[in-house]
Image 1 (cartoon, rainbow, N blue to C red):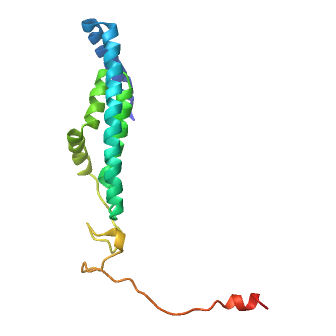
Image 2 (image 1 turned 90 degrees about the vertical axis):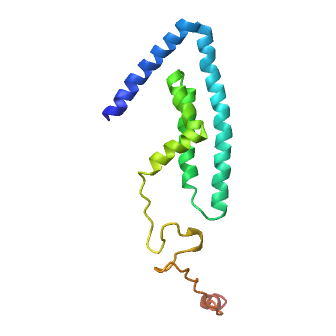
Image 3 (image 1 turned 60 degrees about the horizontal axis):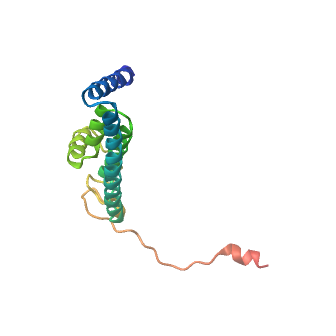
Length: 160
């Protein structure tokens, strides 16, 4: 809890200090203009990257794969978009870092290297989950198909 408390106290103070320093150098109106410009550019970038991520996730789901990377990227995009809407140059820099694909992939690579994936029995790592479990030897097990006819017994009782 302490790191979040420090983050919510120190970050606004740093943002105000940077805004004041930039305002002293270039003036108040240009500073406000820059803050608004970064928000508009950030939202445009967010829209473009978000649509690209959604399309990649749909493509993976269409072939039966779990779009884990795309889901993680979606979270980064949402955080980046929220940071860009927050007034300030520090949050804008972090927000843009979340939106730039190369930097985002670098962050995700570091983050996902600490994630442990747990699979149920019968699903080996990298197995194709869309087509069912595999045997212990890694061979596909065919689905059992039983052919036959049936007659509903309760239909005969209801007709009397």
